[in-house]
Amino acid sequence: MLEDREYMRQPDYHSSRISFTVLLLVVNAVAFLVQLMAGQSPRGSQIEAEYFALSVPGLAHGHVWELLTYQFMHGGWMHLIFNSLAIFFFGRSVESVIGGAKFLTLYFLSGVVGGIVQMLFALVLPETFGGLLVGASAGGFGLVGAFAVMNWEQPFTLILYFVPVTMRGKTLFLASIIIAIIGMVALKDGIAHAAHLGGIVTGFLYARRFIHGNWTPPSTSRRGLMDFLGRKPGRGTVRPDRDVSAEEFLQKEVDPILEKISAHGIQSLTARERQILEAARSKMEKR
Image 1: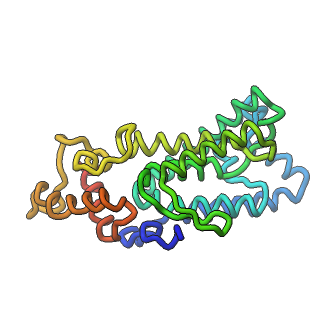
Image 2: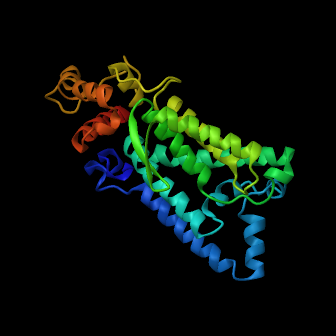
Image 3: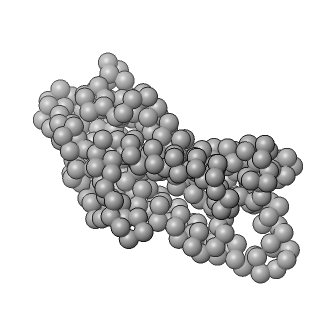
């Protein structure tokens, strides 16, 4: 199962930090409870629809904050549960690799872009794509897109409707794109497929460009590691302590990890190996 794999568990070196994935789930649950309580009165339901759910009329009236607030609202308990499962399973893996700040940026950016894409289609085809938009699925699909990039050629197993399905990241990405397009073209099921499409494409582009520094799949070379850690080669090196040179550190600690990533994928790393990469990235960001 996906949740049983080591890279899906929170690494030890993050144990003392806040898990933004868990925090996001808690905030979504609290927001939904507030939404339910407010919806008990006609006035509360009207305020939710006019000022918090995303809609073309709302944006036309200047309610740009709806691009964020709609991500904390849901259409029911099952809607919340399915979105929470996606955030939990994919979010933990993505956050453990890129850190909390980039994780939140990725998530909310995917939600905003997904909402904009849905609204653009609603302008053209209001009967199909119009109406109120709520839910965290666009942000969740952004995490799916980033997860796919990070595991582009690596097999993993997902549980889909209680059936284990093994696939690679590129298969997950292409399947999600195809499902979203089919939903937009052929289905009228009330699901915001255009927002899903916008979210997953945003997550895909974010991971390739702003995490790995290029438009190609993640590199496992030393140069690729430098780009992944956010530092260009030639502009400084990792120095974990005063007694170990950067070259020695790369040869003794980082290079074996890169070889392991190349052979088995980033998900095969142990907590200690992830800690080494995190330490290298942190020191690079401080320089």
